[in-house]
Length: 163
Image 1 (cartoon, rainbow, N blue to C red):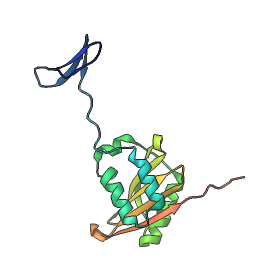
Image 2 (cartoon, rainbow, N blue to C red):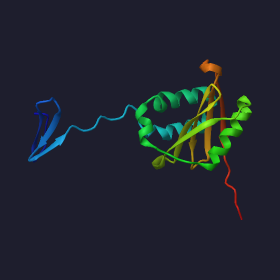
Image 3 (spheres, rainbow, N blue to C red):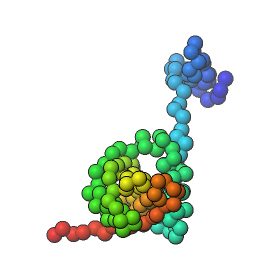
Image 4 (cartoon, helix red, strand yellow):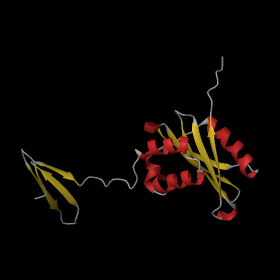
Protein backbone atom coordinates (compact mmCIF):
# COMPACT_ATOMS: atom_id res chain seq x y z
CA UNK A 1 0.00 0.00 0.00
CA UNK A 2 1.45 3.37 -1.07
CA UNK A 3 -0.82 5.87 0.60
CA UNK A 4 -4.15 6.25 2.22
CA UNK A 5 -6.92 8.77 1.64
CA UNK A 6 -10.11 9.34 3.64
CA UNK A 7 -12.27 7.71 0.96
CA UNK A 8 -10.08 5.15 -0.79
CA UNK A 9 -6.76 3.38 -0.77
CA UNK A 10 -4.07 3.69 -3.44
CA UNK A 11 -2.07 0.63 -4.45
CA UNK A 12 0.95 0.30 -6.67
CA UNK A 13 0.57 -2.49 -9.22
CA UNK A 14 3.22 -3.82 -11.63
CA UNK A 15 2.19 -5.32 -14.92
CA UNK A 16 4.07 -8.14 -16.65
CA UNK A 17 6.62 -5.86 -18.33
CA UNK A 18 7.44 -3.86 -15.23
CA UNK A 19 5.53 -0.63 -15.91
CA UNK A 20 4.14 0.85 -12.74
CA UNK A 21 0.51 1.85 -12.44
CA UNK A 22 -1.39 3.45 -9.62
CA UNK A 23 -4.74 1.93 -8.83
CA UNK A 24 -7.34 4.19 -7.22
CA UNK A 25 -10.75 2.75 -6.63
CA UNK A 26 -11.92 1.52 -10.05
CA UNK A 27 -9.41 3.61 -12.05
CA UNK A 28 -5.94 2.64 -13.19
CA UNK A 29 -3.52 5.51 -13.90
CA UNK A 30 0.00 5.29 -15.26
CA UNK A 31 2.88 6.50 -13.13
CA UNK A 32 3.14 10.32 -13.17
CA UNK A 33 5.72 11.68 -15.60
CA UNK A 34 9.06 12.44 -13.99
CA UNK A 35 9.61 16.09 -13.22
CA UNK A 36 12.16 17.91 -15.34
CA UNK A 37 15.63 18.34 -13.93
CA UNK A 38 15.17 22.12 -13.97
CA UNK A 39 12.56 24.48 -12.56
CA UNK A 40 10.93 27.02 -14.90
CA UNK A 41 10.04 29.18 -11.90
CA UNK A 42 13.76 29.94 -11.63
CA UNK A 43 13.31 32.10 -14.73
CA UNK A 44 12.06 34.80 -12.36
CA UNK A 45 15.34 34.53 -10.47
CA UNK A 46 17.25 34.65 -13.77
CA UNK A 47 15.36 37.83 -14.71
CA UNK A 48 16.28 39.42 -11.38
CA UNK A 49 19.92 38.42 -11.83
CA UNK A 50 19.93 39.87 -15.35
CA UNK A 51 18.96 43.21 -13.83
CA UNK A 52 21.45 43.14 -10.95
CA UNK A 53 24.44 40.88 -11.63
CA UNK A 54 27.59 42.81 -12.48
CA UNK A 55 29.60 39.71 -13.46
CA UNK A 56 28.05 38.56 -16.74
CA UNK A 57 30.11 35.37 -16.72
CA UNK A 58 28.52 34.41 -13.43
CA UNK A 59 25.05 35.22 -14.83
CA UNK A 60 25.66 33.08 -17.94
CA UNK A 61 26.93 30.22 -15.81
CA UNK A 62 23.73 30.39 -13.72
CA UNK A 63 21.64 30.17 -16.91
CA UNK A 64 23.67 27.31 -18.35
CA UNK A 65 23.70 25.26 -15.14
CA UNK A 66 20.01 25.64 -14.35
CA UNK A 67 18.46 25.69 -17.83
CA UNK A 68 20.48 25.30 -21.03
CA UNK A 69 22.38 22.20 -19.91
CA UNK A 70 19.06 20.32 -19.54
CA UNK A 71 17.86 18.89 -22.90
CA UNK A 72 14.20 18.91 -21.85
CA UNK A 73 14.39 22.71 -21.43
CA UNK A 74 14.08 23.00 -25.22
CA UNK A 75 10.77 21.08 -25.11
CA UNK A 76 9.07 23.80 -23.06
CA UNK A 77 9.34 26.37 -25.82
CA UNK A 78 8.56 26.78 -29.44
CA UNK A 79 10.62 28.26 -32.28
CA UNK A 80 9.91 31.93 -32.87
CA UNK A 81 10.86 34.70 -35.28
CA UNK A 82 11.61 37.91 -33.36
CA UNK A 83 12.49 40.96 -35.50
CA UNK A 84 14.17 42.92 -32.68
CA UNK A 85 16.41 40.03 -31.64
CA UNK A 86 17.21 39.18 -35.26
CA UNK A 87 18.48 42.75 -35.63
CA UNK A 88 20.28 43.07 -32.29
CA UNK A 89 22.20 39.77 -32.49
CA UNK A 90 24.15 40.82 -35.62
CA UNK A 91 24.83 44.26 -34.12
CA UNK A 92 26.20 42.74 -30.92
CA UNK A 93 28.15 40.08 -32.80
CA UNK A 94 29.83 42.77 -34.90
CA UNK A 95 30.60 44.77 -31.76
CA UNK A 96 31.99 41.78 -29.83
CA UNK A 97 33.91 39.78 -32.47
CA UNK A 98 33.67 41.89 -35.65
CA UNK A 99 31.84 39.09 -37.52
CA UNK A 100 28.25 38.39 -38.61
CA UNK A 101 26.26 35.55 -37.04
CA UNK A 102 24.52 32.75 -38.92
CA UNK A 103 21.91 30.11 -38.07
CA UNK A 104 20.08 32.21 -35.48
CA UNK A 105 17.60 29.93 -33.71
CA UNK A 106 15.22 31.37 -31.10
CA UNK A 107 12.83 29.57 -28.75
CA UNK A 108 10.07 31.30 -26.79
CA UNK A 109 8.50 30.17 -23.53
CA UNK A 110 5.28 32.23 -23.72
CA UNK A 111 4.11 31.80 -20.12
CA UNK A 112 7.28 33.53 -18.92
CA UNK A 113 7.70 35.97 -21.84
CA UNK A 114 11.19 34.51 -22.16
CA UNK A 115 13.23 33.84 -25.30
CA UNK A 116 16.49 31.95 -25.50
CA UNK A 117 18.49 30.92 -28.49
CA UNK A 118 21.72 30.11 -30.21
CA UNK A 119 23.70 31.18 -33.24
CA UNK A 120 27.12 30.69 -34.83
CA UNK A 121 29.84 33.20 -35.60
CA UNK A 122 32.36 31.26 -37.69
CA UNK A 123 33.61 28.53 -35.29
CA UNK A 124 32.20 30.29 -32.22
CA UNK A 125 28.86 29.43 -30.71
CA UNK A 126 26.68 32.18 -29.33
CA UNK A 127 23.74 32.15 -26.98
CA UNK A 128 21.03 34.57 -25.98
CA UNK A 129 18.54 35.10 -23.18
CA UNK A 130 15.84 37.77 -23.40
CA UNK A 131 12.86 38.82 -21.28
CA UNK A 132 10.24 40.44 -23.53
CA UNK A 133 8.34 42.30 -20.83
CA UNK A 134 11.50 44.05 -19.58
CA UNK A 135 13.02 44.37 -23.08
CA UNK A 136 16.26 43.15 -21.52
CA UNK A 137 18.64 40.40 -22.51
CA UNK A 138 22.15 39.11 -22.78
CA UNK A 139 24.35 37.61 -25.49
CA UNK A 140 27.33 35.31 -24.90
CA UNK A 141 29.81 34.31 -27.61
CA UNK A 142 32.47 31.65 -27.11
CA UNK A 143 36.14 32.09 -27.90
CA UNK A 144 37.77 30.74 -31.03
CA UNK A 145 37.54 26.96 -31.44
CA UNK A 146 35.52 26.58 -28.23
CA UNK A 147 38.50 27.71 -26.14
CA UNK A 148 36.28 28.39 -23.15
CA UNK A 149 36.90 32.14 -23.24
CA UNK A 150 33.54 33.86 -23.44
CA UNK A 151 32.53 37.40 -24.39
CA UNK A 152 29.30 38.88 -23.07
CA UNK A 153 27.00 41.79 -23.66
CA UNK A 154 23.87 42.83 -21.79
CA UNK A 155 21.34 44.89 -23.76
CA UNK A 156 18.08 46.74 -23.24
CA UNK A 157 15.58 47.63 -25.95
CA UNK A 158 13.33 50.66 -25.99
CA UNK A 159 9.82 50.73 -27.45
CA UNK A 160 9.51 52.94 -30.53
CA UNK A 161 6.34 54.86 -31.29
CA UNK A 162 5.72 54.42 -35.02
CA UNK A 163 3.24 57.32 -35.19
